[in-house]
Image (cartoon, rainbow, N blue to C red):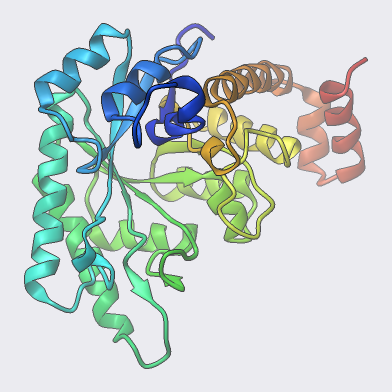
Length: 326
């Protein structure tokens, strides 16, 4: 349990800024959010959005993160500039598409300077909104070839695709686990893999443990976004707050398949003004408790037998006894 890595979304720590920084004018700086995140008991890592969080020079940020006792788990690519609204890797303008690819390469280079070799690609701008808007085969090839070029640029780094059904585009180019696995196979690079965001998986109408099993079968699970939701949108709620059994099964499946990465909390305390420090500490405590429950599932012959028979009644009784022990 002591070797677990817990990472978090840095922007969460702008939540309730006026309560934490009484004299703050405007939004907290990246440095201030790092300092606040460091007060979370049990937190070990941060993820940085590129280029969004590079508001100070790299040396200053790297030193601050080290001084507060944290490390960088990975870089999360963000194409926030207005020219990318109609697409980053699938932009119809070749010059803008090239700019998006080169910006991603710079993000990977920056990650190396923080000691990180993980780049996560959430391609929210790549997709379409209307019938007769896009040449589907063309934008698919543009997306896959861009991912391939980026992976070939950095063979020493893990490049991970994070999918989401939609938002900001009405339909994302990679909306579910199946299309991601197809893209990884077509790109054909050994350093490519997939990040599973629990709320995105629910939003895609998928069973999280099944998605994890398929990733392990056909690719590699390189990243995990721990959160929860009601399946209607990207809620970013606290871990296991809505779907505790599905979360337990998800974590158990990942552990059985050998996941060794960070447990990254992509939650949105800022959406409703929650205390992000308390929220993050609750997430860490929840994951630790669920991992302990996973240990009770390992080598549980009664459970394994029920699963082999697809005996849902027996398996639910066993899980209920473990999860709801008096």
